[in-house]
Length: 287
Image (cartoon, rainbow, N blue to C red):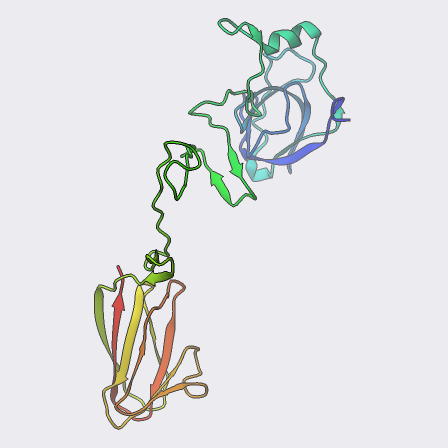
């Protein structure tokens, strides 16, 4: 029966202290209405008021009940520090005389017509400065108010589907590697260039003691070995496992990994079988 009654609204917290001119501020004034009877309440006081005006999405002006819309009440006693809230209990909707209804929806010259244009919940026309919010598909694509223009037309053939269409070139990749289509129709991946080589020398002073190194997120490949030819290197990717579940790099050998995506961050853990050795680490970044 929402056509006859305003349903319960709130309670909603005030986001600023009330003032002496009947003005309060809330996170959203949606579902509140002019001439609605409301209750302000806090830990210290309570008051009964009528909504006289709603300004935009957040500001409500209040006055005494059953008085002209120009009247305002002092609501400065309602403080956010006292957990002040506003609520409206279920009540009959405000009656509007027929002549006032017609006047409210009539558009002035040069339109001269009953208004049928879209407005937002606060009665404001949708314009460039007040764009219509749009949500596409299942909600995974959003057009926000900062950039509300979207024009997309993709086609792989000229003049298709419409005459004058020009085929688009679309690049698919993850920021480093790019998907390519070969002349025979097969697909391969063009691996992005790695252009910043770096070297780290890490002292392993104690034998059979775990050390670690965290790669940068831009690392695409690495190579490592131990400088002391007498020592073996034990490698793991979980803390504490370089002495239990590990990969062994034998004396004189090295470990190399490439084509990496370390955007989530990776730490390598390692230990040597002899003291006073050095881990030589060479890695490449794509920046």
